[in-house]
Each structure stands twice: as C-alpha cells, then as structure tokens.
Image (cartoon, rainbow, N blue to C red):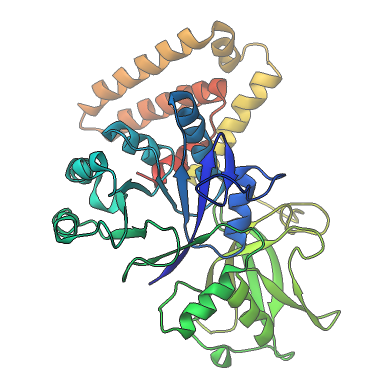
Length: 398
C-alpha cells in the first residue's frame, strides 16, 4: 500500500519546506505543532531531514525529533546527518521508525550491511535516485532485505516504492492527494470500511449509534449517532463526523470548539447495529469541559483494580501527591527527603531481591519483590519527571 509522506527539513530547531532552508513551513508554529497539523491533514508518515551541522545542532535536532515522536502518532523516517552507526542508533532511539541512509554518500552505503544486521532491515531506509541506484546498490539492498526506498529528490515515488514524498504544507489536504493517486491506479493507505453502510442495522431514525473511546486508555468518551453521509465523511476526512438528531444536520466534532476527534479505528458489533470508534481526542469530549461525558457516578461497588496501566497511574498519582503535599510518617516522603542516592540504593536492593526470589520455585515471592521494585522505580520516575505514558510509548517502539 502506498503512503503519503510529507518532508520536513529540520535546522536549528526550525522546520523548513525546502532543503536550502529558504522557506519556513510556518513562522508561528513549532516543529511539533507543524507535525500535529500534518497528521491531522491526513499524512501517513513523516520524513524528517536533519540538516544539523555540528554536535550541538545535532543534539538539538535529536531533542526535537524525540518530542515529535512523543506528541504525534505519525511514523517517523529520519535521515540527513548519519556519519557513523551511532547516529543511526540516535535517530531510532529518538523515535524514528526508520533511519534513512543517503546512498549518494559513500560512508552511508558502506555501513548499510552493518546497521541492517544490528538494528534490523525493517528499521533502515535508503534515499535513492536514478543516478546512483545501480545494479550493485540494488543487490546490496536486496541482500540486506532493505525495501524502504525514498526518492532522493523528495518528490513523489522512487520507482515502485511505497512512499510518496511531498512538500510539508499544513494547509494541504493529503486525503485529496490520496484520491488523486487512487484515480491513477495506486493502492493507497486510507480508511475503507470492510462492511458497507447498507449492511448496517439502523434504528428507527435511520441512524447507527457510535460509542467513542480514547484509543490509548480505552476510556469511554461519549455516545453519538451517524447517518450514511456522516459515516462516509468520517472515512474520507479521518475526523469523527456525526448526525445531530436535534439540529437535523451533520456535524464535525470539534468544528466550533477545536476539540476534534481523529479516527484511529472503527469496529462494529455482532448485530451490525452499533459502532465502536477509537479516537485521538483533542481537548475535552464533553461540552461541559469534562474529558468524558461519563463523569457522574450513579452507583458503584468496591473492587480491586487490576488494569496494569490504571494501577500504575493510580500509584503514581499518590506518589506525586506526596511530593506536593508531604504527609507525616509517609515512606514515600522519607525517600524524597533522603534524595536520589537513597532512592537509587533502594532500586538496586530491590533488583537484587528479585534475582534471589527468582531462584524460589514458588512465584509468590517474586511477585512481592517485583512490586517493591516497581514502587521504588516509580518514586525515581516522579523525582526525574518521567511518566508512564513516556515509558509505554518507548516500550511500544522496541
């Protein structure tokens, strides 16, 4: 499947639309904000060309790339300043899905086999052109199973590659690009429903209810309705679009508030009469300002929460609260008062306890020791300002 990939040239922490850095993509927006706009415009991936010129500017570029990777869901293809294997590692660890080598640079070509073996061929891409992609280079890519080929002119496809490189323009509608490429016979990544709307079972008003969830936490955000037009426009634009039963008209969620919902997935239930949408929610889903419309409890019963992320976040919330509002006799406050050396010592001790417990055939002891270790690691995370979202995002890239 072919993908639309805008190209962003990064220099001195600013985003340009051209390699000569003559034209800023937008003078008011940061590179991260620009990338979020490109994601909203329908881009499938993002190519970042790092034009850093010394160690300091390279480190600055890496920090920007890392922030882009944390804030956007766009897969990142990163190249531009690869002089050694360590630079490939930096790009990948900063959040790049692929580090892209320039085959017009002899040093890049020379390290192709080494980096493919070390990081995996799926993590490596190459910039190629008609002039330099000869039989020898083609064989080298084939040997190393490198299939991610990018047009070195940063314009369109290279031969039959899957990546359509195009200018980064926050005012573009990349979904329109996709429609044009479809007409040319290309198979393009896009939202296409596996079941036709005609096969949905609608209610008496000719609508289908849509349950909306946060795509990362699975928190239920709201319930709304779609007619066929709203469903089709949701697929076409990637923005959740509904039918208002009171106003008798179609509406795009966030059109007036800016609290858009970007589609991540759509599922249908066993009876074909209810949709489940997982979305990236900007701002609050509820008109009251609450993140979810379901913020009022009617009745509840005590139970033990076992959802891993929920438990981690709840424990972290208690730790953060202790840091801000110290409580007499609190062990957490004792650790904060003693400082990082004490916390690190406890992390080391608990890690050793895990090793000892692992030799015990009874798993109960290791469960206890891992719990102790994770608690102390969370205190360390709090001290260093690290969140579980950052940890899980990093783990998902491994």
